[in-house]
Image (cartoon, rainbow, N blue to C red):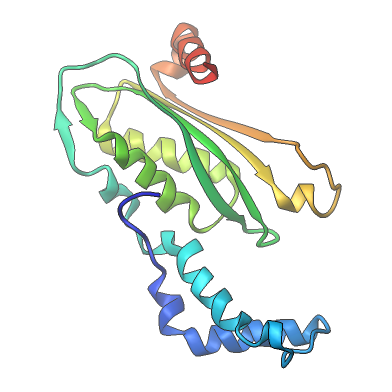
Length: 196
């Protein structure tokens, strides 16, 4: 878990309304909202929303904003960053790992910043394709590397637990920028290193 926790203050400010609507959803699906096990559920769901939707409060470009001048211009990889997000189509969880590689052009970011960036981007209603592109675009914009590549693996409960019900299936998306787009050798090096 990153040192900095993002919290959705809008949920906190609207706590009563959110709790009311959660209670109404429970009633509308046929639950007895006054039974013991559900009495605190609206409050618990509201607190959970503050946490899992905390990315709305983050300035994603600012996360990588503190960069360092460094002459290193070779591949840097941060792999196996675990993430949890919520599908914007069904509000069902999806989760997996994100692998980030970039070739600096004189500016590097602290390694923990990449985990924070993942946290901020994924803690919103999302689709995996957008997560992949957003992370690559932010790295490209803020660090101006020679190139960057992002690979996201995800397991989606909207596909595993409902609908087609295919548990264990994974979705893999990639975003390729700069030299990674032009040079097959750079892409291959990144992909072989994240498999190790």
